[in-house]
Length: 269
Image (cartoon, rainbow, N blue to C red; front, side, top):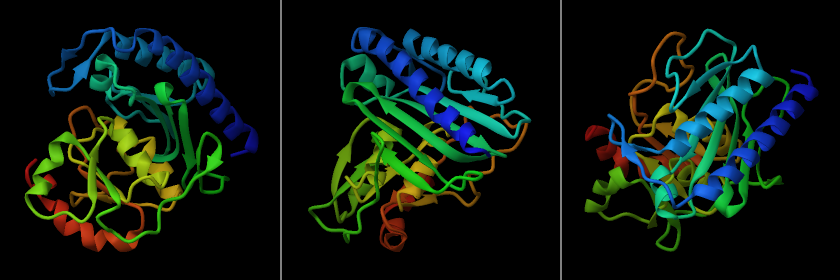
């Protein structure tokens, strides 16, 4: 793809997440959530942001497909497709906890090649490219390059858990544990060198599409905790109810140490 295409993608992602994020900040901590069929929460802000971003993509990239958390879950027959999580961390958003994000992933032929994640309360924006056509693999936080840690696992290193992965702690674990309440941010802390790893027991496709290219471009290793590969997504298939248990570590060499400790996550699903 020409450089002008990727410039347009970055400019669009910045503009729409800034605009939507500014509006969400006005209502953050002041809205009530309801439970969806899968037990996750949704607010009118999620639905508004989902629609706003989807409409903007349809206008700016009319040839691109779309899959969103609050809209269509079926993967379209398009070479390029955006996957949207309008508010990753809805529970945090409703309770006034400042860790929630707007997440955009761009897929080419079913595999993420670009991710853009904006956290309005923290004023942090991550983006990255991984095996994108005519673009170098690279990852950034607020436009500064980022890379994963090279430290060995140790008691003074951090590791991010999700709320559904705490069974892991029934056995000794080599790092300090943190739970942040946002699947995207859990993984991005690895990309930014804040943590050595992250475990997500039940993320959906919109939780991981944007962070998948970013963490790998930063040097991290992504390990699906199920036998089938996550990508490429298949045309016509619905991805609304499928979880993707995932382990992310800062260096591939640490997979062998952490994998035996987290296998209970996938076996409990």
